[in-house]
Structure formats: C-alpha cells, structure tokens
Amino acid sequence: MIRHLAGLAPNMRGALFMVIAMAGFSCNDAMIKLLALDLDLYQAIFLRGMVVTTAFAALAAATGGLRRRIGARDRRALTGRTIGEILGAFCFLTALTQLPMANATAILQSMPLAITLAAAWMLNEPVGWRRYAAIAVGFFGVLVIVRPGSEGFNAYALLALMAVGLFSLRDLSTRLISPDVPTFLAAGITSAFTTLAAGIVSIFTGWHAVAPEHLLILVIGSACLMIGYSFSIIAMRTGDVAVISPFRYTLLIWAMLLGWAVYGDIPDVWMVVGALIVVASGIYTFNRERRAARNLTARTAQTR
Image (cartoon, rainbow, N blue to C red; front, side, top):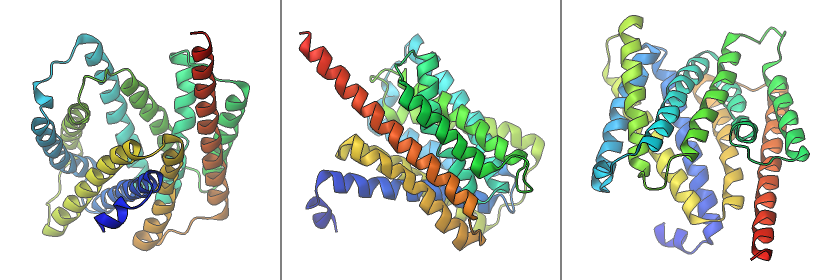
C-alpha cells in the first residue's frame, strides 16, 4: 500500500491524508459522544486527555522538544491558545453530546470564516469586500443550520457557536507562536492544561465507574485523535495548501456518516443547505486569501 501511495502525485497523497485526518477527528467526536452516554463528559475528556497528553509528551521528548526554552512572547501566545482550546473544547463537546453530530460539526465549519474576520480586526490583516461578503453569507448558512426560533433550536447550538469563537482565539494565538517552539510541545502543553481543567471540573460534576468497554472506546477515540493530528500535519507538508485545505470539509461528510451509523441521525434538508452554504463560503474565502497573498508577493518582487 505504501508503494502505491508513493506513486501518487503529492497533491493526491496530501488530499488522501487530509481525508484520513478528518475521519480521525470525526471518529474521536463519535467516541466522546458515546462515552458521554454512560460517563460524565468532563470525566471522559480527562481520561482521553491523559492518553493524548502522554503520547504528546513522549513525542516531544523523542524529538528533543522538552529541552526547548519558551520565551515570554511565546508563553503569552501559548496561554491564549490554551484558554481558547479549554473553553472551546468544553463548549463544543457539551453541544456535541446534545446535538446530532452533523449539526454540531456543520456549525464548526464556519471557523475559517471567523478566523478571517478576527484576523482582520485583531491582527490588521487586509480583507477586501468580497471576503467580507463571503463571511456574511457563511454566517447566514450557520443561521440556516441552527434556525433561531424553530422547535429544533436550543442553547446547545449557541454553545457550538461559542466554540467557533473560542477555537478562533486558539488558532490566532497559534499564529503568534514562533517556529522555534516544537509542534508536539505546543500541542502537549495545551492538551495537559485541558486535561487538568477537565479533571478539576469533574470533581464537582461527579465520576462514574469505568467499565472495560469504556476503556476500549477511550483508546479508540484517543488513537483516532492522534491520527487526526498526525495526518493533518503530514497532509499540509505533502501537497499544495490551496489543493489540500478544502478537503478539511470532508469532516462534515464523516460526521454525517458516523452520526447515521452510530446514532441513527439523519440530517434534514435545512441542515444540508446551510452546510453547503458554509462550505462554499469557506472555500471561496480561502481562494481569495490565496489570490491576495499571491498578488502581494508579486508586488513585493516588482519593488525589489
């Protein structure tokens, strides 16, 4: 199989790796949702975090990341990343336990739009009227999904929307971390504090007995999460970012399939329409960002 993959063009391999990564992330979400049926949610996050943090620590140690010193600027950026991850994970996973997988995931697909908007306001990154229009259309798609005022609308949809903002804080903070900070170290620090926070909250929300089947689900979910992290990194290093990035939206397809297979959730027509609007807006925004970056590079080269 490896030989066959090596024969593929880099963009095809990168796209395949991104699809695998999204399958890993979606499978992890399904396992957490499954665990939350019997265990307290924060207990489940804590137990999963113990496995994932240990894995990241081992990877950081193996690559020499634990010996790196972190400067004051990077500590501030890591603090913002960690706060965004902790609160975002708590909001999204709480929503995930109460909403159909596809609905919660579809709302989360608006995150690239939120990041573009936040980067324009907080980092002064240039954004033209076309991208602002695409962002507005994308958030209209989110409204189509959550349908305020309808019988299906509830506070958990708002939690998913809050998660979008908090995960945007996480990703914007990640941009500010210098390249000298190893990826596994940054991910390990975030995972460790998220695990600690979940452990503290679980003291007050209560623990339940952990059965062997829970441990199996926990291991599967943790393995899927690591697959998601690893293959997403490999994918972005394999092919052209412009070709690979849109395949992130296959997360929504996996969420629909797993939601149907595991929980019997069948997306309604409004959810599908809203998701298509969000995905189309996200792809358009990404392509506009890519074109703007290419034009800026060309202008810079002409002035030299």
